[in-house]
Amino acid sequence: MKILKVDRTASGGIASGRAFVLEEQDLSPDLFAIAPEQAETEVQRYTAAVDAVSADLAPLAEKEEIFAAHLELVQDEALRMGVCEKIETGNVNAEKALHDTAEEYAAVFEMMEDEYMRERAADLKDIRNRLMRKLKNLPETDLSGIREKVILVAKDLAPSDTAKLDLNFVQGFITEGGGVTSHVAIMAKNLGLPALVGVKGVLEAADSGDFIILDADEKTVYVNPESEIAEEYVKKQEEQAKRKEELLKLRDLKAVTTDGHEVEICANVGNLDDIRNALKFSIDGVGLFRSEFLYMENDHFPTEEEQFEVYKAAAELLGGRELTIRTLDIGGDKGLSYFEFPKEENPFLGYRAIRIGLDRTEILKTQLKALLRAGCYGRIRIMYPMIISVEELRSANSLLEECKNELRTEGKAFAEKPEVGIMIETPAAVMMAEELGAEADFFSIGTNDLTQYFLAVDRGNEKISAMYNPFHPGVLRAIARTIEAGHAAGIKVGMCGEFAGNPDAVPILLGLGLDEFSMSAGSTLEVKQKIRQAEYQKSLALAERILKTKTVPEVEQRIQEWHQDN
Ligand code: PEP
Ligand code: MG
Image 1 (cartoon, helix red, strand yellow):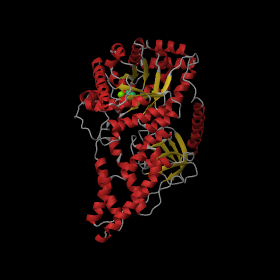
Image 2 (cartoon, helix red, strand yellow):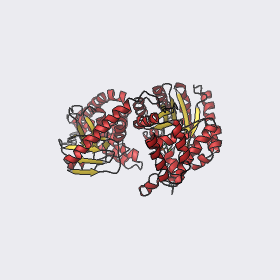
Image 3 (tube, rainbow, N blue to C red):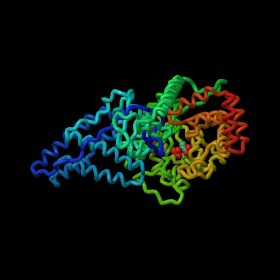
Image 4 (cartoon, rainbow, N blue to C red):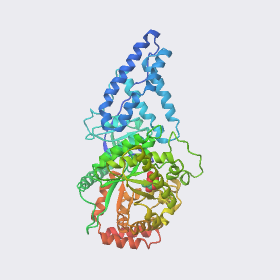
């Protein structure tokens, strides 16, 4: 038996099966010197390969954004010119010219500081490999032929590989390379497929046919486990499957307590695919669209038109459901390859979120105009991140009014009165909630940041991660205060931080009067179940008791008592 561990989960869950190790093909360029008169033939071979790959990608591009991006990349004029120039001036064949040009491009991506952009190098490699297989007459690595329950093991998986997986057979995957924010990891989460990435040594540890248990929740891989462990996992998986089936029955039911108190369950999303997936869980709407993904996927600030198309498509997908789009929230740990941030001692306390938008108003205005226009196609709510004062809200809103005037002059249709709300994720916003509530249409509590700012505990610092606890009575009081102030102002209060998707937090949040719970789609049914099992009156009593607690253990004890009583 071999056991491998990593420290971060790409996509949670437990799976087991025989290892299917993706064999590597030799995609290196061989015999590459050519005579000058062969150059034309090589250019033609390359053009034919581009055409063939484009034809393969076209149907996939209609279904998934990532393949549309790949299709664009394979047809990229600069890439084509780079390859042709190398053939013509370097006297090398198409394979070698492609190889060298792609290396140069990938080197540029990999040198970027932003983790997300670095991982885009994988997309380029995906394209290069597809082209190379065509040039070398090698078959596509065919995952669609798998016909038994397997765990896929690979050095790296391309997003295009994950799209071909038949989920009746592929139970999960493990890769040696990749980061948790890679497209592959994002797609695994969307597919609900357990996955671990960056598992060093897995290719050496596992051969095709070995029995594998992948416990992504515990960040552990067992290769040929001892029978005791295997038996234990058979039970765990049976329980997991039963649980999933039970939960699916709740899909079309309302999130209502036993005594009739109803709340909304919404999803947090980063792109259109996430929305499509979330709709499978019958969500009430989108409580947080992290628009920064749209900016991070681009190599330039997306134009008004580019943004409009995405927001409009999102609104149309959601029909009449609410769609809360947060304006650009970069800075802190989120960068953009094409935007230079100042070097800062404390980036989380620095130039980020709405501060950038109010400083570089042209960036925020471009986005606001796109949002206003897309508002004609659905129920778009605009949300500003990291507000600390009434002045900031007013400044942002006055930019919004400027945008409306400009759109009027330009003769473009837009939503006159979209709901405009703010994230409550700073202590100052909590303390000013009454005043902010008087001028905002809704609140959404961002507990990820609120916890770090309230407790002065960096959310990304491993060393003090045990102190990062939203069950701290101080944080709970901040949440209570926010909900109360929002309700006094007559506005809806939601939560889109991770806390909203934590089943243990449900009774407290219910009792504090939270109107909307927004979380990753995969958690929605479990939270709904907790709500449907709860009695609102008892939650109210619990919340009251919790607000009097002095310590985290006391909070935990009150929750325990509530569970026993419910
Ligand atoms: C939050 O801070 O709770 C939040 C939802 O925003 P993000 O995690 O994107 O900072
Ligand atoms: Mg935040």
